[in-house]
Length: 117
Length: 113
Image 1 (tube, rainbow over the protein chains, first blue to last red):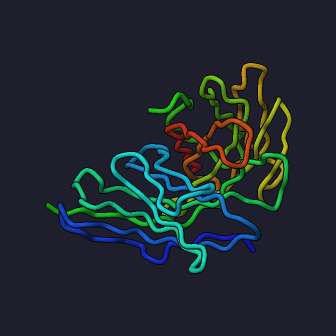
Image 2: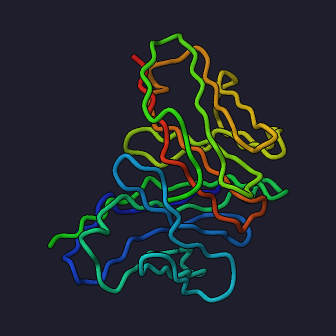
């Protein structure tokens, strides 16, 4: 079955410290992976994606993610956290069970990031 | 901000009623998808439209239906509302293609009482 797991409900980090939000996936074939962020009462904002190529992907707002095929992980990282990074983060994988450019995303349950001053 | 807009932003309906939610896609995008996000959960795929036809559906009953118009805007219709339909409904537009990212609107918060 294709799925995404975000093992931490919440991550707490002090401002200025590095942050990591974890994501593991299970798909058949090569994965297409995405990270989105959701602020209160807002929709999802695209941060970055991994399709192919370098395992370290850089995205918006200083975020990056590391793809690890052997560990089936796609962890989101940032070298120095800001209080304004506090939000809900979702990892997603493209559902590859249907062909033809089908754009269905399978989301994890989300991880709440709290950055403390 | 994305170019995807949804209306209304909030809605309260009574159980058994019908509701229509609307979405205007980002310019240049030919695919629209709808997701349901219940409180404390990740978004769940409802269905997708491409060239005005439904080309994929998640595990939602037939009382969830939709339309896509020639200008790529879209509607989500839900009949016979149930209390469990209370959720944030998100519209996402994209280009066709496995590697393309989806851009989401701000959502419509539906409360069924």
